[in-house]
Length: 184
Image (cartoon, rainbow, N blue to C red; front, side, top):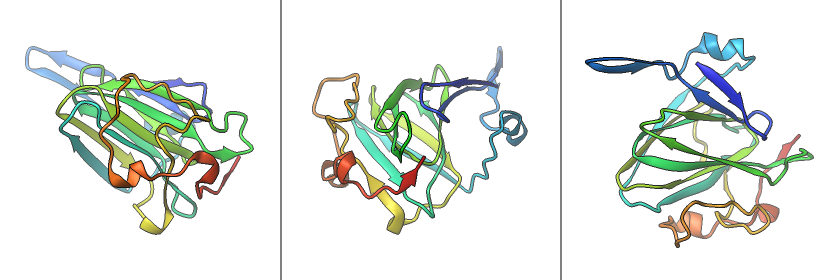
């Protein structure tokens, strides 16, 4: 398993070793021991999967505030997405900055998004499936979001179209108006 840091402290690209032969392939998507070797102690308690039928579907930018903040390990198991993490930790040198990466069923890359970051993705193909592990259960009272096209963040989404959004995501506030409570 290969761990590659990004320009956002704590956000890591995780690339599992893939072992293939004439039958197909096998990969280990998470190993507590290998994550601990990297200084990462994560106790995943929830595993989620989403399906998006249409290219251009955008989910996010979502986060949970303390005391139920979540770290996530995200991967695309069918199709392709542009996955994004946004630093929402007040006082961080990278506050309001974002990192994006293409995650596909073919490249098998994963993105580790720690507490204190908002997360979202845009589907790059039709019929997309995304799976992610969380180290905290979903808590509606701690749920928060940021508008996907907040101009102060300036995410460069790969498709220049009006995305398919949920009503919740259409009405998300700007970063400066959101209810996050993370201190760096």
